[in-house]
Length: 269
Image (cartoon, rainbow, N blue to C red; front, side, top):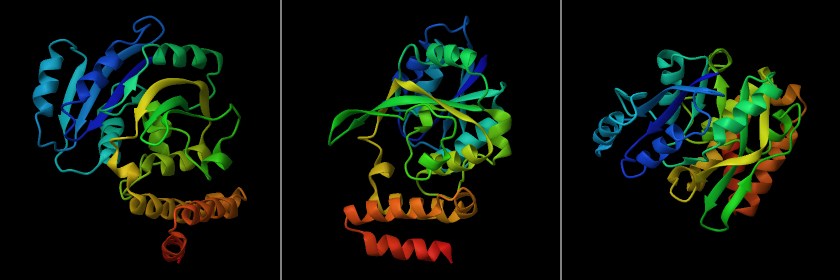
């Protein structure tokens, strides 16, 4: 299996080197799989990200740097890379501040050999949080993940290995959403294509420094948008009411029930 790795970044010059090194240090590269290229998609950084990548390219010749014309967010950068730049049929997503376990792609390749019927593969991950320290995020194996995805997202974007054809067929990431674009994409993807999740943590995801994830306003606005956009899918699978109930219970717990209810009503009009 030949794999293209994509890292969108914005002003992460101080962290991206470790992220890149964790990709090129993968056990089994060239045997079980081949990392054909690693594309760093710079979303108009104002720090010295480019200088860091140019220096690293001397050590890693498969590393490439591409600067977006305008700052458009991670969704736009990933879409452009997968649809227009990658040379392979499989894209592995990584973030510029996260670290892959050294056996991540080895474990995924071995799993895919046993279960080659999916178009998107993921795995559990270890989330680094302020409140609870290290927390494993995942779900037991099953044949259909759509119902659970309607309620919560257990697939982090840097755990995703996706087939290019299937990715493009479902339209890629929604570039209009301000947060949770991976969650919205996964609902559409799970409706059309098979997903498999490996029940083992294969990387650490830094949730402490992710400002977008901690912005409660953006979070709930995005969840309302996701439900409204995918209303027909959720209704067809008879999980729309469950999705709404899950959203409102979460909003009530965080003291924003009335506001979230109004946002959802607006999106559903």
